[in-house]
Image (cartoon, rainbow over all chains, first blue to last red; front, side):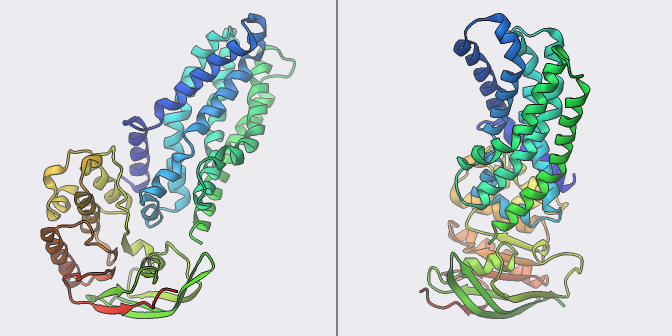
Length: 222
Length: 200
């Protein structure tokens, strides 16, 4: 087993064991999406119209929920020091942690989204579109969150800083994720255009996130 | 012949000058004990050697080591924290660090060397402080690296475990390794002493 796959497996194991965050994200997602009809009222047509947006905001908040522990937990127990002393480049180690985070937090959200779409009276086409855009967009949320997670460790302030840093950066992902979902159902824009931009945002953050997070962690060395 | 040379090292943390103009030379098979009062910079010097802190001045060089590796990649760092995950078992914790740090030995023999082979399947969260420290030190045995940086390695260890650690340190030195240890008490090995100045 190589160093990076060992790190990937360890982070996934930690997420699914007691005290890990794998189920927390999905449960939080479920609660947020369930709360919305109580707030806006049981107007089925309205829920259908704003459904994709609700699912996207729920997924955004749920994926942020476990992100603040991504480096903080390793920093508190001394593991981060040793991760810095391995043979693997820090950028790749961070990418391995990001993949583990996405598999345990992002992927369950994608799988849960169709079920929650039913709660919001979405058409089958809209459910498919939301699930597809979440599949393409949640890796971007994880990778953008990496930067905030690394910064909050480097700055030695708690995780409370993380949402403030990260949420503004996720606005483009949110815009194109929701507009692609809406385009698939309502139009008039074709689904392809916003969806392609969403994929581009994901690919860009996949490259940028690990480098920015590694730079932030190195800066934390003083 | 492995040789670790540090000259004119300075460390500034939070705008406080922790130490300046510290230097030492260490050859293969030698140990260096860092002593001094609390706040003198013993831990900072260890982190500096391991590349976990940046020096404000001076340089550290390793001559005769693997040329394609940094000093940090040839170094084991044992800090105050044990770098263990409470929800993983003892064997899983050690196996992860062996894979990540580039070793290939199975974890069993290193656990046996530290006398905790019987705990392999227990989650690390149930270990006592001394058992956690032993598990953390097992990493040093399982993955061969020439330089050991130890920050008060004997803390939480009982007399028998301290003797066991001293024997392991002697083996490491006899095999051409180097040890830099911050300590307040006796290490149980022959070591040069570097006393860091009084805290401001």
